[in-house]
Structure formats: C-alpha cells, structure tokens
Image 1: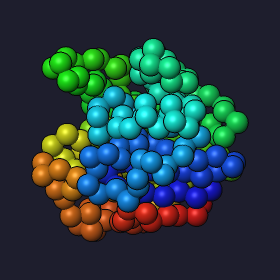
Image 2: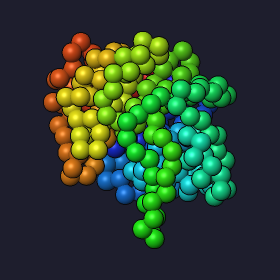
Image 3: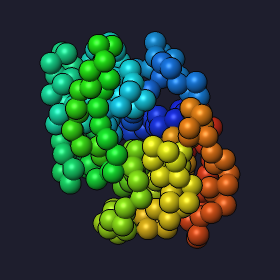
Length: 226
C-alpha cells in the first residue's frame, strides 16, 4: 500500500489496483502539488462537508466515475447531482473491493456554503479508518481532542494516523500530541495547518511534543510504503 500526502488534509492511498483520495481539496489549496485535471481517483472518501475537504469532489467524481463514500447526508446530496455514492454513518463499516472503510466520530461541523449565502447541513463530521492489505490508515478529519481516541487506538491500531494540528478550527499541536498518545499509532503525520493564516503552525514543533510515538512531517507529494 502506498500512502501519500498532498497538502492541507488531502491524502491519497493506492492499493488493490485502486486510487483513493481522502478530502480532495485541490482548487484553492495553495499547498497542494495536485492538479485537478490530472487526478483520476477510483474512490473518494470524505470526512465532512466543509469546502476545504469536500473540495473538488463533484468534478472529480463525474469526470472519473468515482465512487464517493461519505456520511448518508453527503452521499444523498451527491446522488442528487448524479454522483455515484455510498452512504455510511459513524460506527459503521463496509467491506468494499478496494478495502474496508469505517467511520469514527469527530467533533466539528459539516456544511456547505452556497453562492446564495445559504448553509446546507451535511450531517455529522467523521474520521476515517481505512483497512487494506493488513494495514490501517486513520484520517481524523477535522476534530477536537476526545477521550474515545483511546478506544479507536485499541480497537484499530493504525500504521499511520493523520491528525489535524492547525488549532482555531481543530485540535492544536498540544491537543493533537495528546491525541497521538491516546491513539498510539506506529506513525503520526500532521495535517490541516498553514493553508490559511488562522491555522499557521510549526509541524516540527508538534513532532517534538510527541511522547513515545514516531512522527513525520510530510511535504506535498511525499509518500509512505506500508
């Protein structure tokens, strides 16, 4: 399994002859190395409906006939736009031909802001556990620290955990370091920082806060072999 990071919260997984994109915020993402015209995902996984995570989902899914896996509200919203979708909810898991997906809780919001200044509620935010080839990837999405991360770590030990550190909208470095302690994955990678002024952080400082966990700052385009 190859796992790569592409700025903000964009993560790509290549496994079982499939390309999977998590939270494909590409256009408007000044930190990504991706071009929306070149990306060809078979599957898109979404943690929640905010624009910096929902991103280019509709365009990518329609162009590539991608399957989008998300909470039931987002999946329904996408189906109304002609996108192939699979709805789930927190605590639920489903075995696909490309791997197993399980949604975990996340403490945040989930909505889209329209050009008409309307807010469309898009269900509960989530974290994502992705399991394939005997490996587990945990993408926490946007979330505050919560104590049940310890249960997630015990039930589904992660080979790599992608944790937001930006503060303001999510956990900051201190809380994210404590989250890493609760989850105790083999590797911790910081995400959701430096894209916008309110979430400016030093990722190396975060790595220095980890207590017994290995951490790695990934630049856009960096990859791991699990």
